[in-house]
Image (cartoon, rainbow, N blue to C red; front, side, top):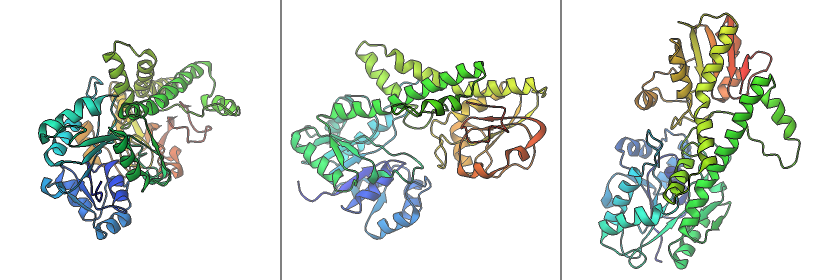
Amino acid sequence: MEQIRICVIGLGYVGLPLARLFSTKYPTVGFDMNPHRVDELMRGHDSTLEVDDALLQEALRGGFTCTTDLDRIRECNFYVVAVPTPVDKNNTPDLTPLVKASTTVGKVIGRGDIVVYESTVYPGVTENSCIPIVEQESGLKYNTDFFAGYSPERINPGDKLHTVEKIKKVTSGSTPEVADIVDKVYSSVIQAGTHKASSIKVAEAAKVIENSQRDINIAFVNELSKIFNRMGIDTHDVLEAAATKWNFLPFKPGLVGGHCIGVDPYYLAQCAQQYGYNPEIILAGRRMNDGMGEYVATETIKRMIKKGIQVLGSNILIMGFTFKENCPDVRNTRVIDIYKALQQYNVNVTVYDPWANPAVAKREYGIDIVQQLPQQRFDAVIMAVAHNEFKTIDIQQLCLDKHVIYDVKGILDPQIIDGRL
């Protein structure tokens, strides 16, 4: 193949770090439909905080550019699709972003070019759903005029240790020769190395089981937490003791949200059902984890009642709204489940999160959050996200004399809390 010229389509949490990395080795263009996103990146700032401004600005000086203009990506020959793959309100996989991205690729792809998908999908989506769109739009024939690959994203938002170049990458291609090219391109920038899968479907399947496995394991310890809570046993003490065995898996109970773990199992389940198999364990894990927000709210209210705190009209503070600590990502956050469950008790809920963008929270979830620590005192405080800033706050100073503190993340002094998962 001639000199690689890369276009990354979708400049979010996955696409931007990858595009920036590719730009250190190849001529690279980032494409996104959102002009506001492109404008901020071209000014040298990433609001997702995944790429440091200094690194982004260095990349821009080196020739990396971002655009919404199709004409500016026609000269590329290696297209990488990194758009979201969410589920709808019924937890059915929504391939709309992929369809639109494939349409975009079809309008610009040329003979001999390669398109690599990174978006999480179930096995078969790349070749059965995406490629036909590219063929239709381009008028080119798959594996004759153009080729494809799949390399599942492994970005961990907010993680400054396991950055994209330090995470081993699975690669694949639509022919053995293309698989070699795709693997060579990725291995040239991924320090941790690559694993070349035997087919695109194998690579797709590997992605969905990675996060489904984590989801099921977390569901197990969430169920243990419910059981041990009834027994009056501290789950974290149990897990600490069990972890002394060399092969014990150190999962902790908690809320399971985000763009991967809380979503990917539904993609795997959808695929299984298409083949006439009902995935009982996968969906049972999803039901358990999706119910943890309501469980936290109910447990908090129970403890308020036991302490004689008037629930109706009480003031409750939720600390944290993002789906995980130390990042601004609110996609599929399950903290919203705590909020909605508490609303049913006619209490006044304040959500404090210095990381989350209030405008995004309002647009996506219809709620108001604050970025400054409230000055009032509360009847109950729920520690929902383990932001570093929260670990230095005297939680008791936020509470009335008679209060409840519920620790979802297990980061507070056990002596001051009334309950935790």
